[in-house]
Length: 93
Image (cartoon, rainbow, N blue to C red; front, side, top):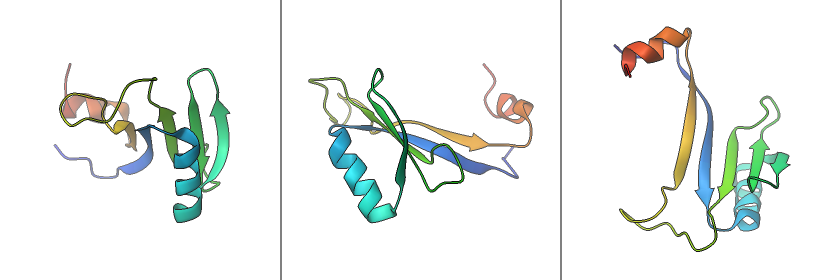
């Protein structure tokens, strides 16, 4: 089964430097900060239609992006589908 009417909702990235990453996504992609969560060390960025199109989550101190041994660069992504059961059929748990 394939998703027929899906749409990318958002993507959350693990980043080493939150402020530097905010500047990059603002200056290169034109995203604006829509919210910050200081407890989870996250910045949410948007083009204005959604709460966030990209979220940046700071890696914990001492954690690095290391292929196969460190933290993944992608934390998670969201795909909108027509119905919840579509996801269940794609990958049953």
